[in-house]
Every structure is written in C-alpha cells, then in structure tokens.
Length: 279
View 1 (cartoon, rainbow, N blue to C red):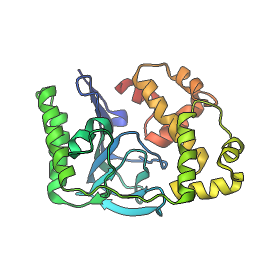
View 2: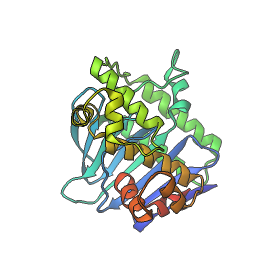
View 3: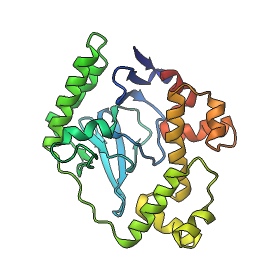
C-alpha cells in the first residue's frame, strides 16, 4: 500500500511496504522550507524542479562547499555526509528527493562492492540526461498503476546507470581526522544516552573548546548539533514504526514534546505528526 501526505499542500512523502529500501519526498512550490545542516543514513539524490536554493555539503576533512542550484540541477548526498539545501531570498522552490538504503544499492556498484557502499565523488550536476532520468524515476514511483516489481526494476536500471558514469570518492583521513571519526562514531553509537561535551572531550583527549573547534572544521557542525542529528534520525525510525510522539521525544532526551517538534522540524522541514502520518 502506498502512503502519501501533503503537509500544508506543498510537501508529501511516498513509501511502499513492498519497497522498504526507499523513500521519496516531493516539495511543490514550498515556501519557508528550511533545513539545519544534517545527514542521512541513506544515499540521497534529488532533482530541483523549480526555484533557487543553495546546496551546502561537507566531506569530512574538506572545507564546506556551497553550490547555487536551480531547476535542472541534480544534487547527491552520500550516507552520513553533513549537508543542507535551502531556498535563497525566501523564494518558493520545488524538488524531488529520493532516499535509498545503501545496503540495497551496494551490489549495483559492480564487482567488489557488494558488502559496503562506496561514496560518490559527484555532489551536484546539471547533466540533462541524468536529470531527465531521475524525474522519470520519481514519476514512475508515484504511478499507482505500476507494480512494485516494475518500480524495483526501474530503480535498479537508474542506479546502475548512475554508478556506471560516476567516480567513487577516495578520501585520505589525517591523524586528527581519524580521532574525530572515532568521536563521531561514539556519538552515533551512544546517542540514546545523555552525553555531555565534557565526557566526549575526555574520551577524545581534547579540551572541550578544542573539540568543538576541530569537530566543526571536520564535519561542518558542532558535536551537540551532530548528536541532535543522530537523535533525529533515530526518532524518524521510531515514528515510522508507529511509536507515539511523546514516547519518542522522551526516549531520545528531548525536554518535552514541544522541544522535540521544534528540533525535528528544524532538521526535516516537517513536523513529527506529519511525518508519522506518512508512515
């Protein structure tokens, strides 16, 4: 069964039980849609269909990149990469955004990649052929007359084509970067706990102020923002499973339901209730 919700008449989510490896979000001339810098466990690819926005992304160890995008642009976010894409001048903008399980994708990358997804070097492009193919894929997914098997087939064909023409990223991690990666992984693993900056700094063998400074340089956000991002990702999973909003807010250490709603909307541009209804 397909599930669609159109919050404020401008945004909707699409999921299907028979295709658990993907989620599609569509925004149509949405106003006031903004995101804090965040990440996804999924591989994400989007097509800008209207308006103007600024796409920011940061590969660990590199500087923050900011790319203006308009209709006809394709943007790509590898799993766990910090990014944000927000309209410029407050103008309405439209897009499709497809989130795909990297475990499902990895066998499509070719020989030797079946166990682990390899991040792509490409982050933004105006390739006309790729843009048209992505639009066709999203419209096919929204077609209620197409079967789950047909939709799975077009997904496989699209991503095989994408990977065949895209280089994977080769990233050399410096010594401090390796230490920060361990700190980031510690936050991911223990984000359900009431972590403090002092505790993280002690385990990173840094002072709190130095940890904040170098972590933000490496990931584009502070350790606290990184922790919130991890908690929101886990909260999304819980809401998708049907957990009550108040229970999710409590379990993930938000002060109350109103606080959870503010943070959730800042990271996802929708409310927990609207997201849960779509699930």
